[in-house]
Image 1 (tube, rainbow, N blue to C red):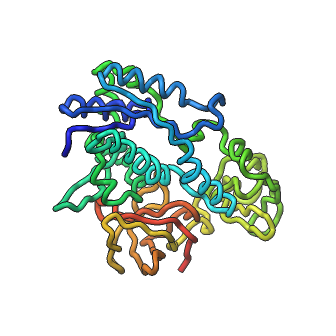
Image 2 (cartoon, rainbow, N blue to C red; image 1 turned 135 degrees about the vertical axis):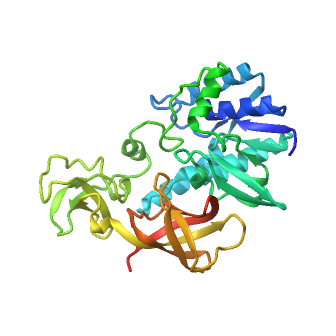
Length: 362
């Protein structure tokens, strides 16, 4: 497997335990702290300074060297620019997926190899399985933390050079290991949201890069309910942030975004989490990536999810043509959103996926 391992040490408990486990298994471990964002380093929501302090403290405790590497330029060109371009087109990309394929398992991997690494390791909850030189991406054993969804665009070379030591552990076990070995960040809160945004208000941050174009919020009957700040700032299925909480109409249920009318600059909403307008039979996806380099069988029962926290849903791949794919689900799926990723599984094996182009109703 190789003895020289470079760990992406983020300052969080997951990467800390990853480094500790590998060091105690006898590997030569070096840590790298990745700096991927620097536009607003002094912003109240930016945690990179504290994360670096935590990462250095962990490295000192474990007894490994740590270096800082700046990938902010690569991140802005290969992740953030695509994220903004997608939002300007009215879709909702997931930058964390591109961050993994373009930064953590590309730029970071290349840098680590130049340092003499045989493999890299991260704190993702996933597993790699090798069968006769062929690599599979498997779900992590902790079903509540499995992160294979974010890794579906990795290729054979990237998987062959990657280790995920936490794949067989529960999150609670990871925190126990950190606490038992006096790693000070054992109870540090997990990071949430998009990696470069932190805990800051989403729309407020995006307004720096996307011009606000206010318009009407309307219901399915074209009745004006409120005013939006720009349809680029909203996503299908969104409930919070509509600023219409005081409106009591219809059945009294909460309002959700169900569609966008770009010609009229209207945000279309409807009431009820299970509103039929939010439920779709399937989807078409583009830019498909299959980890094995071979497309799955047609008309075969797989499972898929269209967002990270969603349970796997039985599905069939109806067609695959020129990197386009049509997927039909056994039951209607909630808030299928253009720009998000659909990820396909066979049991616990992640086969790959692509970017959702549009939803389908049969």
